[in-house]
Length: 230
Image 1 (cartoon, rainbow, N blue to C red):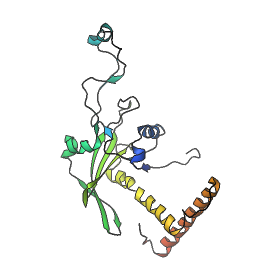
Image 2: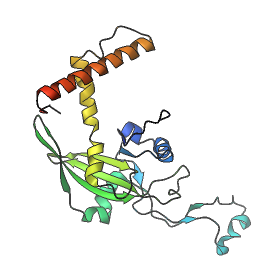
Image 3: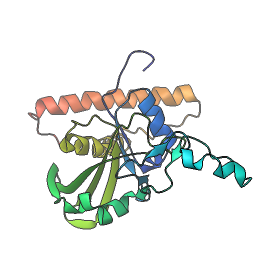
Image 4: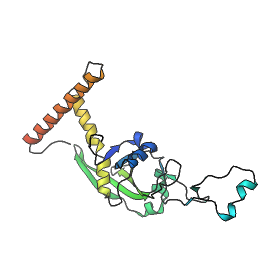
């Protein structure tokens, strides 16, 4: 990015998606992402109200009792709690009213890969446990495998509101292509068959493997008329 290269999207597994500090940093630099998150990742289905100063009737309560003064801004005492994403699917009326929508992701070796998806705008916590100051809604995608309903994935995205569910799902599941690339590089091109220890040597081996992969992929695409396995 320091050299002027911008990424249209970043996508990553729940190991990174659970890191809310990382997600906030991506927001700060204006980077769109689709993050897989664990099932216990908490969101608000409706942003709670925030108090920025004490109400007139409460001004003397904290001081008179000798307790510690409350900090502001803070969440209103009676607010809707943040809930885990797997419970959003079960209990959120807005989510339960939605039908599962089918999306054909790709054609694999064992047939078409189809996922059912539900979508809901949600609110995330900032570093102080409050809703984001700009009130920006985030996308929550819940996707389950049409052949195995026990296989469920949860995704959060900071993309603009007009971004389609189909686009978000395509980005979210694009990691499989990258994983397949690494698999082919290791099995067919010897990317992991290096016998060096220094960083520079390892980097050279990695770059040669990547260039070789690119050359072979382009050669195969050209001579097979575009019929290339995903």
